[in-house]
Length: 268
Image (tube, rainbow, N blue to C red; front, side, top):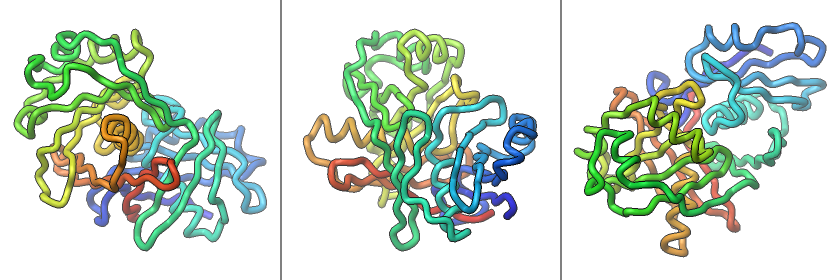
């Protein structure tokens, strides 16, 4: 069984957030320098230890460090397992239980670790971190939400505002460390594609990724915020990556009270 490369959240093999899934036999799992291998790959690397076609362990790396969780990496892993006839509808990753499903041409995951709370964070400090003004925010209060990796979610007025963001990464990193979340998810209801519901940008310097192409866990966290605000959650679509000339679309839905993150997973 060989490694497979995927573009996640896109139907096209030249767009999407890249992930490489690398199978390792149980007897070989301690003989590799995984970070060195990850540095050679495009995007995140997902190392899956298999024994008799059973998943024993999963480790995820960016090009600079090991990371605890990654939405598009997890979806690439599920596509890999599904394509190789490895039955795996549930996985335990650290302290998280992950459930998978596939519907027509989309792959989905949810976790059992959803949580949300108001963040007591100074509006002017957040504005400074992104070269904005407090008047650029739709709401003067922010939520920290997580379905696997905690994010601070910030709604902006329109596309022009989100495009003009000028991130100060050291300040973003310091705020993230001080308040114990793993990045910022900026979003607006003003979109490029009329079929989308939100346009977003995600900044994750603590994970070694200054700005992510597409961030499934953050889009899932947005689902928690919408549910908190309005009490009901309809399926919605988030577009991301356009500023990289890399169009991605993330699908979010609620099933039996759980937030599911989904999208296309296309072999490269």
